Length: 128
Image 1: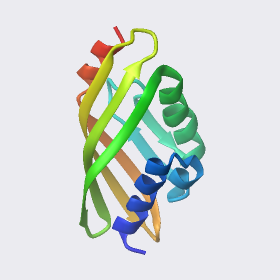
Image 2 (image 1 turned 180 degrees about the vertical axis):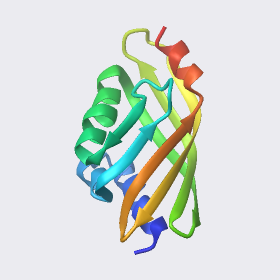
Image 3 (image 1 turned 30 degrees about the horizontal axis):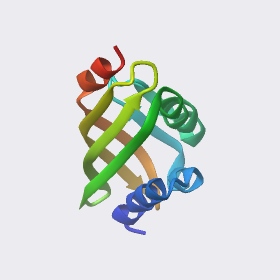
């Protein structure tokens, strides 16, 4: 399976609201990094840590959190996704709309690393 297909499967599942489908393309030892300054910043190892520290946390702190990736670019085993995050902070009621870039690395049909790049200041302002 091409790297682009692996990553696209994750985003397709996201669009369907299918958490199991989102986690399925991830290797058991994936290194998933959320940018410093982002609400769930850090590096998490494995799908379980990704779910608990990223997806569950975002769902708990933000209403209508969406990630819409409009472009995917493949270069061998690396895929870059470009899109937007939108969400409303539960405590402040402030809305955020931020551009995002995701860099994926795929080996043997599984995503082995993920790194996020976004404007973390927009999220910080929405949370204050």
